[in-house]
Length: 297
Image 1 (cartoon, one colour):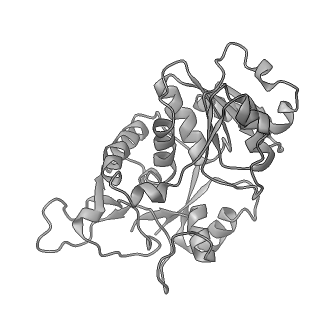
Image 2: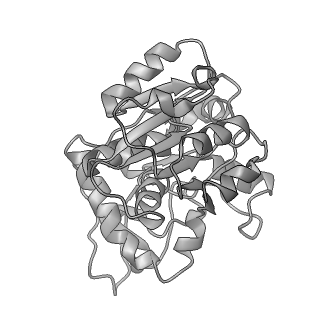
Image 3: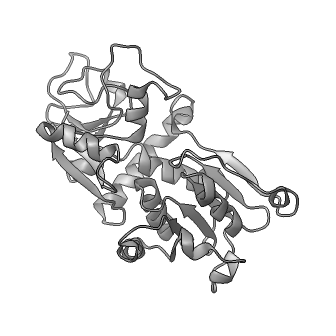
């Protein structure tokens, strides 16, 4: 293995609160990038020195050596920066699948999301931009929020609001010339989810893929009756456990091409393995808001 990220789901697995748990004793880590070190006699599609990622991802990427069958590995170009190869199969893939699976979007449509600074959020902004889809983004109030807004706008965000800016009677009055959002994404819950719902158009859909605030989603009766909103859930693991997993390999290639062309980028910190404990503290949020931590072995 060359590098592997610390994702929230990795922490959840270790804590024993994730729905899918590897048999213990187990090794942490779920995605990453490695270099082929040696080959079995029947392997024909890979060569020593090739860069590969486990696909579908599987537990145990936080170690120096992994032995698995050839069909588990997906070869990637060495032109891809190591930290991107190590992180492409969970967050960016989730963003692409969510944009494609729930509403048939067309150029000129609008989406809205909270958690816009996460890797999924940053990926949604850029993938929407490639598709000609407008995007509205909600971030939490924090010191330096203006700098965060500018950073997201450089990625392709059309509008960025802090939660407090949306304490108005009609959030749709803030849309200017943008169409009302037909699709929303929620990874926070609580008030941040309610704000996504307020933006949605008649018959709109909100997809929940996380709950960082650990607060429930509260939906008014009128949202269901008069706006006919739909609430859906997304779990990447469910797709990896289905026949659809084969459809994801071309999507991985598409995402890697966007990375190579500079159309998909997100904040990460490549950390040497000897600083693992510091990276873990950052990933756990003990040191405030931090970039995605990627361990280099």
